Length: 243
Image 1: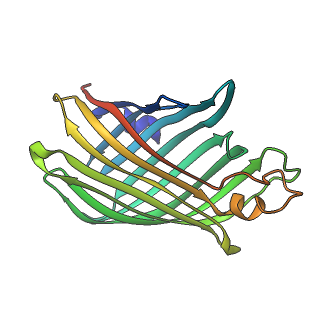
Image 2: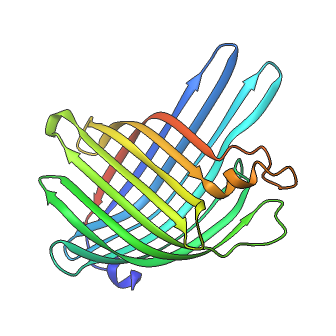
């Protein structure tokens, strides 16, 4: 299916590089990036991407790794009506700081588009996910089945830039109270040229399973922080690929 979609259709290549630096008594750095191919032309919408980040903190002669993660993702959407889309997707990721060795999941769902005009788009989606999770040090792998609810929006303010957000809520269907994920980002973007933009990004990631295990002194996740919050500055570009 993906090969059919890629053939003979206009593509957009996107790339982003972002980060932050702090110097003084404490020296911290965090760099991240993303590359992808995407298409959003009725009736198809799809994206293939990879993103990751790496960060360190230094105090005196001591250095700690504060971020080391990556995720690859494939998503294919099909409009059923002007407002309703169905989609399938899969992803695989790791997060060394949270002791996540591998999380691979896939699923299908539906999306309702509230607004899609003049460069602005707002939607909400719901999906059912099946997956595999292995945390470093755990002797048993996990196979959670999750509900995924995702509001997403982009607001175009013309020469004043765009404001976009995406937020995921993914509870384990067998343990809503303790095993859930909340993650997403808010981005303000100002175009510098037709293809290049300056971005201010606020990213958040919370893992309820890590939170519950981090309190157990016998767990491999004992003491691991269940959340990350980062404010980043960066550049991104989008280049249409004509075929």
